[in-house]
Length: 276
Image (cartoon, rainbow, N blue to C red; front, side):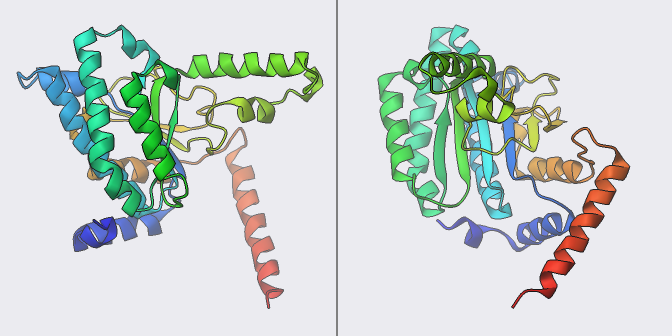
């Protein structure tokens, strides 16, 4: 099923309006929180919240692809989540395999490239097999980069990167003077990704929960009170509209940002004159 062709006229117009209103984030990270509470408040088993949360994933992936967002990272399962009751962990692993099986063809048809970050060897073997199969099938696609953070911890990835750098220093491949922010970034599992422009968290909690800690140093953060099962494309559009209203200064003043923008415009006009 082609996602662009299945969009409604109203949704296409809404996306065009958002694209014209300002910059679209190149990379959005999602902390998908609130599945269990969504279910409990409705008198349902927690697993029903996780199932409904998958419907939100489907809708957000389709909308992000149509908007031209280059990367989304879904915080699907943290290292801390292994502490949950074993029955719930088993259900989450089953749902992950079912999602990968059911969505593979459609994701591939729509040019999505799948990636995964985290301590993947901690996942059950059946999950690893299906995950790596999907990654391999979609590895040459050039559309939306969909990254699943599984058995993931931001602190763990930073520690792992530092340990690897230390080994390379011992081997003589790197000297201490070579260690810069860019070098550390290159050792992280997210080295292929641009840093997230926007981190979206559902359920109203005001914390990063160990998600992309290094990479989100200058990310804009958007918090919604809606639980993840209620987070669909309209909520994504609200998050992007909010992002478009913000001024990203990266330590500079507003005046400097305005001057940089003006200088960029001047350079662009000069270069345009020399185009053949």
